[in-house]
Image 1 (cartoon, one colour):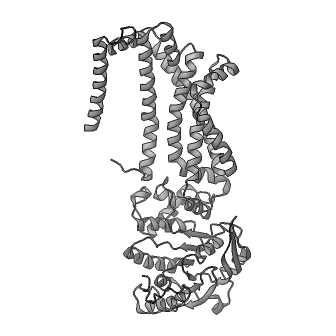
Image 2 (tube, chains in turn red, purple):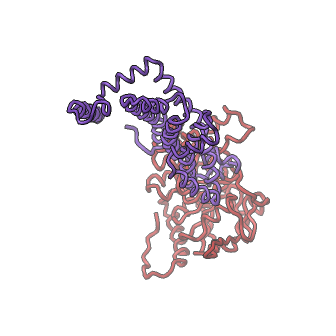
Image 3 (tube, rainbow over the protein chains, first blue to last red):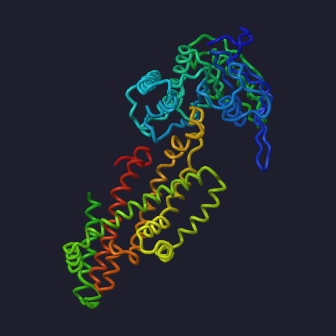
Length: 272
Length: 253
């Protein structure tokens, strides 16, 4: 979607500078992420892979402004993040849709407090993004009436509607079946190519990362540090089963595997 | 439909047993009247202009008293839901208050408010407020954290969270609490009227006892049950059902 900062030298859309996050409870001190320095260019789609508990979600929370770094800085357009903002939206592991609202009510949620839009404009905007995720006609449906894949599409529309510059993905497709997931890969690529948004996508699925990312960052196990960055110079839209994607997925998996504790089981299959 | 028929049959059977016990003369007539005697006494009360004004008055008192109670309970429940220290302190207090029977609030209400209706509202509030507060607090405590995270990233200011996310997310639990609170408040209203009123269902119970009129006492007891149940089912039950169906907590039949 865009060249990396290193290649263009432009101001990064998103920067993490020496970010460390330590969680302290009564009984223990846990260092979730350590000395993360990372720049994401406008329009870039960055994937972060790591095993469970490597602080991937913590990194997203820091970017979203839900948490703050213990040391280091999180910058958007060169300005420090002071809290959540409509320039950064998030898609969650669970769909996190509000069951007390209809589909359109959920999609409207993020723009209801935007006074510069009147009621009609808000509805038009919400319908536009519902249409983009191919859910026209489901405006009045209740959340429980939808399938898992449809719910995540509503969640995507809800994240798109405030028209953020950055969308954060916290393993959003983990609980979907393979077929539904593959449709999402095509849809996400298409939407990001069209809207030129910046994406940060966290997953433990290496093939997913290779298929979606302009760049893939491999994180170490706890505490999460950057182990390696791998550029993915493949043309889009990419197919999930493209041999080049598979080859890159294998390379990422190799990096990731050396992070796993030795179990004697050396015959892991690529997660797909 | 078949199930409803069975339930109806059960009540017909119950009435038949009552009638049979009466016919057998197990107890003297002035202690156990027949269903028909009870019914005709209720009709007399209605004809004399006692019954309907009393029902109306008790319902009106509940409307005011329980309305007040629901608001107070909601506010306390919200406070408990937002602050852990408040929650721990108030929960023990409210659970304690709930062990007190509604009627136990009547003497203190007489001492404070005398015979005014304010005292009846007081008894209703004290009987039912804790149920609403505890259910609200529980509902808030069980809100899935992703809802709050999602609402935050979607730009909900902290001061708007309570009505945009917290209250709606806790709604099923709140409605269940209000439904329970209604029943508790109904106990309180009738208990208070027994002693400190000159109209109302509780007063008619008291009057029946003074007149040694078992038919009236049983009749008013039945009316109290039927009206309490009707409001519970037709008002709060329907609201609860609708919310649960919308949320997908139950499936439409």
